[in-house]
Each structure stands twice: as C-alpha cells, then as structure tokens.
Length: 351
Image (tube, rainbow, N blue to C red):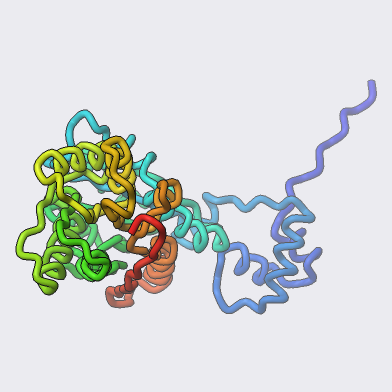
C-alpha cells in the first residue's frame, strides 16, 4: 500500500521570519503588538504571516505577555431602576441605536489592534459579583463600562480590583477612574434655546428616567435654560428612553396641556414616539408643535419630518474610551484620564 502523505508541519515563527527576511524576535514583537517596530518591517511580517498561514498560539502568547488581547464591554443596569419590568433590559439595549453607535466606535480602535471585544450584561448584585470573579481570573485585559445609574456599585468595584477600566460617563462621587463624557446639561440647554428663539410659548419636555444622571441632567439643563428666557414652568413627563414611553408621555402631555407648541424629548427614540402621537392628534410639525430630540441617532433620520436634535459624537466618544483603555493596559502606572466632547445642535425640519 502507498504511504499516506504526511501533512506539512504547522508554520512556526522561524518560518515566518525566513519569509519576511527578519529575525525571529522581530516576528514575535509584531505578533505580540509590541510598539516601536519599524512600520515596513511590521508590514513584511504581517504579509509573511498571511503567506505562511501562521496561527499564533494564544495560550503561549498569554503566558509570555500576560495579555489576552481581549477587553470586556460591560453594560450595567441598576437593580432598583425606574424602567418598567415589562421592558427587558437586554431587549432595550439591542433596540437602542445609541448602543450600536458605541460598539461601532469601539471596533474602529480595537479591530486594527487585533483586540477582541467580549460583551457582558449585569443587572443584579449577584451578577456583579460573578462578573468581578470572572474579570479577576484574567480572562480580559480591561473593561469598558457603560453604566447609567448613579448608585451602581460596579465602577467602585472595578477601581478596588485594580483592573484597567474606562467609564462611559463622569462617575458619581470620588472615584479614581478614567471616563469619557459629554455635558448633558449643556446639550439640553441648546434644545431650550432653539425652542425659545423659535417663539414657542407653551413648551413641555419628556425626560429620561430620573434615577439616571443623564435623565436628570437633561431635564435640569432644559428647565434652567428655559427659565433664562422667562419660562417659569415647564411641564414634564418621565419616559424611559424608549419609543413607546415617548408616545405615552406625549399623549399625557397633550391631554393635560393641549396648547403645547414645543416639545423637547430627552432622546431621539422618545421624540420619534412623540411625533407619532402628534400626527395622530392632527398636529402639524413644526407649524403647530415643534419637536427637538437628543443624541442625533439613526432614529432622528427615520422621523418624519426629520428630527432636529442635540448631537453627541457617540462613535468618537467610544473610540476615545478604547484608546484610553489600551493606554492603561500598556502602562498601568498612568493616572486616570478623561475626555469631554461638546454637544451641538443639528437643525432639521421638526423644529
């Protein structure tokens, strides 16, 4: 019988080095994402890796570098939140365009660095304890934390653990943790200024959840700015950053204040819901009622008419979160850092 052909041995670092015309050490540095490698040499190594089909041994690399080349995106929800139980947490996350923009911004930085992203959701104290145990076992190199509730203990738990972490908004209290944020009050003030200058006389607002800093800050910023223009009372109904809650809030406002001629919704999904109800009630937009949203998400373009909204550069903010985290992973001795991105008003047809 003919002997079976022997499959070729798996390519090694030495094979890659010979093809690239560099040393084994240079190949190792490129594969392990060590900085300060000459760009031309790095490109030659990457081409040789593709040509040879070399696959790094992740377990061996982790032993040498003490890195997993993975980070966690943790989305944390408060256990005692105001959002109705019938509105599932994970379901809301995946239907909210804000979250998709965060992921897109993170990937724009992580993908070129060959860093994997693990997605995790936590809602309860028990889930937070389980998460911390998982993180302490070294499964990821750092954490990108999206936490929307002021009383969430997870930011402090992460700082106490010493694991590199970056928060998606300014932390409450005295915490030595890196963060990225946009001034929520200033953004809401832009909406108030626009409605006041349009000449709206009977203005109302649909707030976000008032147990969330963003919900409270956007409400306070809007009311404070309207007061500067002489508006003593701004009716408000609390929503939950969902389209359905925006519809319900708008219906309630119209029932109680039928003279409303200007509305600020604290995010675009609620504004979309508000516009639907206004159309159902026979209101022309913006002739009868002007509407302004917040975030400048895809929902603003789906709206008819197109939604005037406060723009947050969410993708850029998320990308900066990733950059800050990777810097902390490379240099654990760096102090906590922050980056603030100013909001702007995007004027479209709704106001």
